[in-house]
Every structure is written in structure tokens, then in C-alpha cells.
Amino acid sequence: MPEAQTQQVTVDGRRLKLSSLDKVMYPATETTKGEILDYYARISPYLLPLLAERAVTRVRYPHGTADLSFFEKNLPSGAPSWIAHTDFDEMTYPFVPDLATLTYLVNLNSLEFHIPQWRVGADGNPVNPDRLVLDLDPGKPAGLRECAQVALVLRERLGSLGLDLVPVTSGSKGMQLYASLGGDLSSDQVRDLSQQLAQEMTKKHPDLVLWKMTKSLRPGKVFLDWSQNVAAKTTIAPYSLRGRDLPTVAAPRTWDEIDAGAGGGELEQIMFDDMLDRVAEVGDLAESLH
Image 1 (cartoon, rainbow, N blue to C red):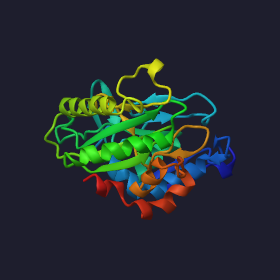
Image 2 (image 1 turned 90 degrees about the vertical axis):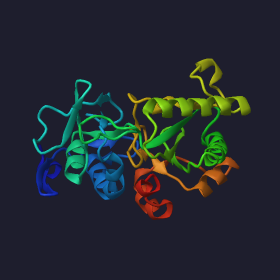
Image 3 (image 1 turned 30 degrees about the vertical axis):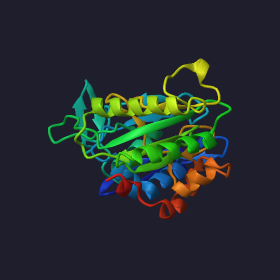
Image 4 (image 1 turned 180 degrees about the vertical axis):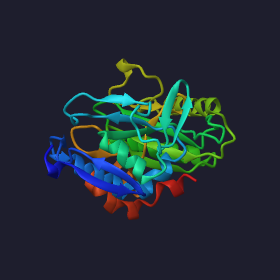
């Protein structure tokens, strides 16, 4: 391997060997693995608090986004012994509490990080979720404009329940809306609440919202996916890259942006190299959700 592609680094006191730094991960933009590692290092102060104490699933792209990918729940068998982990459901999930662990996983070509809505308790088992998520998935020709319109309606509705929503464009087609919870509801209760909200929104806005994943009904509507609150499911972590043609990220947004987008203003998915400049504008999402 050429010397320029390999680098020995010390991160949080841990010695790591970074490999294939010149490998192109996103052919459309010629974005390299080294640039991806740099992004995750720089965004880590905002990402790590959201990953902390959660069982982290990764999507790995061994040869970049133009090739095959796979979900990985288990910690790789050759992982360093210092990586914290938790065992349940016959899986060994890594915790990602620090930059050293994040760097190790990104070096394995992990582009996407997915997490559940619950954290792991001191006994190693999931505790009640500390947040609710509503995933807005548009069916063409609907897009982010229609998602923004639905988001504004949901903001008002959940506000009436005392819940403040945080919007995040997904880096793919749609967006997620998060609300912080106090931990007094079980995953089943949060699932039921979100399903009821989705059904209510469909009844009130039948031309715009859909609560069932029925493909024949999807065109032109926004599927309000309540099921990501099911305990066994995960959602893309805010600030995570996406394995799409372009290096987009799941990006926290301001409500001013959502309001403008709902009215037809510019609202697009955010590229990774723009995200760091936006952090000061949108604030720290971890603080918003706690």
C-alpha cells in the first residue's frame, strides 16, 4: 500500500492505523476516505453525545457508494479490546462514546450510523426511549416542500402536547422530526402515540399525508412513518453521512428554513462539507433533545 494512503495516528490516547486514505468513497464528487475521516473528527463534538449509550448499527461501504454495502450490528471480531460494547439479542453492539471508537469504525468504511430511540441502562438492557421520532418520506412527485408542510402541521400538533420538535433533513429524500421525552413511556407506548398521530394527520390531511406503507397510495403524498419508534428499529443519526451518490448528511435545520421551504423556498439536502459551517446556526441538537 502506498505510504500516502496509510497513516498512524493517536486519538484519545489510542493508537490507530488509518488505511486507504486516498480511496474514493463518493465517485460523483471524488470525496475520499481521508476527507470522510476528517469530517467525522470535526463533527464529533456534536455527533458523539447523540450516539452515547446507544447500540450503534453501521452501514459499511467497502468499495465506496458505487458498490455494495451492508448493515453491521455486531462489533467486528478483530476490534480492539478497549472498544466498549453491550450484548443483547444475540448481538454485540459497539458503544461509540469517543472519537477513537468513531475513527476506528469510520476507517472500516462505515459511512452511516444508525441508532435506536432508547439508550442502554447500567444493567446492559434498553431503558425507556428518551425521544420520539417521526420520519417523513415523500412519494414522488412530492419532495422536501411537502415534507416541510407536514412538519409545520406536526409542530403545532405536538406543541399542543407539550413536545418541541427538532427538524432534521435526512440526507436522503425526506426528513425526521425529533421530540425529547422524559423516559416515562415505554417503546410500545411511544409507538402507539406516534401511530395515533399519523392516523390523525392522515384523516385531517388526506391529500398530503399517509400513515400506511401502501405503495400504490404513496405518489404525491408524505408517508408519516411512525414505526421507527418500535424498539427493534433504528434511525439515521443526525450528522451522519449517507451512502448516496452525493456525500449528504442528516442535517439539523432551523424552523425558519422549514417554514421557507413549505412556501416554496429553497430547501435541499445538506452536503457534508457545508454541515460544519451550519452548526453554529442551527445549534447543538444534543442540547435541544435533552
